[in-house]
Length: 274
Image 1: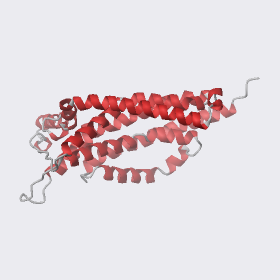
Image 2: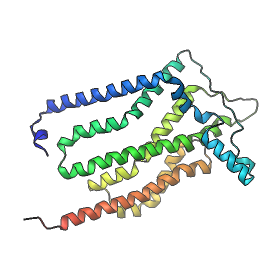
Image 3: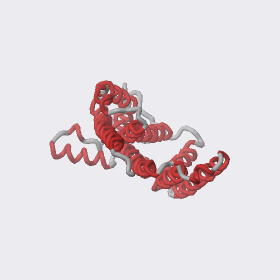
Image 4: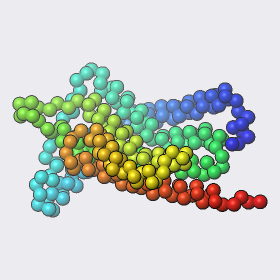
């Protein structure tokens, strides 16, 4: 641990944390205000999956024409979102703007958090901590993008056009749409943090690659259950779209944990330098 971390008192750490949180909140506020001002651009992105010209729908429609499969055509639907409360659109605009602001400044947030904890880390720990933060950010972003471009559009189209009877039309509210989009993005992004979490637990000595291999069947069941919760459509295709990438990440996590164990064993067997 560095001399600076040893000399700082509890109240000094608390004051430094307050300054870090203040800088983070200020950055989110500024980015959120900017996103709020660009309302048309913001909601053209957020509402794109409910339009028939979304990139995934157009791609599947083209594949349907090439393969002569009419069931792949997904550009023949239209869902009109509605607002049922006087203030809902304004508050949803604010909520979406500051959520977008947090996403925009997320690299800066990670930088501030790393700078805060780095004085308390040993040199070797700093060597591993920063790459872990980078991989955490990249994997979370990958999960969010997968949800936005593939998982959520499939789920939304299925649920928004599903009817128990032609006499019961669907009227999807804007708040319901936004809650589903943001919640599914958050959950899928967290699921994609699996390799980083497994690596961290391995570094702490709580997890081994042999344990993960022996418990693979249970992990697959848990992944399927989590995927079923995230994707409320219930169809096997959408379930596979979520579960297969997470299962692949589980297998990658086994390799990451095994590599971490090999490095730890090699370091223990290395004789000290005199």
